[in-house]
Image (cartoon, rainbow, N blue to C red):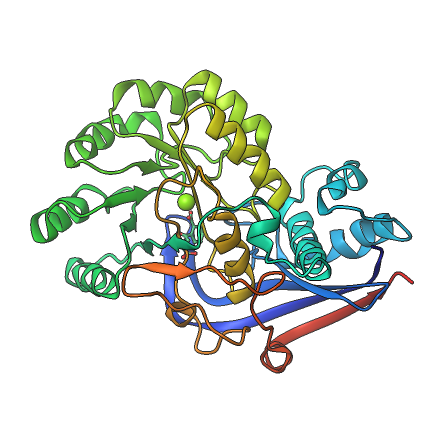
Length: 371
Ligand code: OSB
Ligand code: MG
């Protein structure tokens, strides 16, 4: 197949509830949606779930639009794409910009699977028919509100609770949740808010039987994490620090982590996700799929990769209506009572994209013809 058109959409929708991490608060969701069309008229959708600034990773709305328009689109012009993973070769001159690459790769995967009349999860070797969801709760800063959110999450069936922590909001919330809700599956995510000087916080957190501590130290670090992991028994899970298979290999050799949170968009797409997933599988390292407040389109890719065999923990895949008043897909993601999503069996990502909703919330639409 050949890509004949790429449409880049800056999508902006208010969040139903603000989401606070150690690096900031998000009230409105700015993201980039991508549509591709091929020479036979098949289409596919993807999402580059960036933020409105370089907060979670270095990319922004404008860098994603710029890199797709000025580098990715020209590189695809006239190229025969036999399989979505040949994109890694075609785009290899472009260093970094994983989310821009992922957004386009996702759309090409959706289109490729539709051409083959197969659901995406089966085309990538997924084996699960249902995927488990966990809830990620932001830094709330109020114990009563936090406890209500935990109760609500457990009530909805989410299979584990993750709370965001930062200095000053770490031990007390964990201790209180343990006191009120006992031995529930619980983990914390620091989003790189600590240094090794804070080792006492981790020694204390180590007493609460957490499933894992996610990204405690610097977002690019592997070495300091390896030192911290030696001093605590709770597994360290890396998120920000693992941007590709090379980071995964280096971190494993150093002993920096025991679990990986793979966000397909962070690592540059489904193909890199597969590489990391199978590397981890061979080395006995469990993984799970992380999220970035994706719309229903991005969630569909999370669901597809969460069907892989070495995904061993619940994934950060929230229901559509948790963050969005109206999602961009026809059957919004809804959790079953058992805390799982049923994996769509329809071709491609298996959800219908609602262009009417997208147009209503589109800040900017750019259409590039490669014909
Ligand atoms: O570190 O996992 C993270 C959201 C925004 C930025 C970073 C992270 C998160 C989440 C994901 O915790 C929550 C979700 O998508 O449901
Ligand atoms: Mg994280």
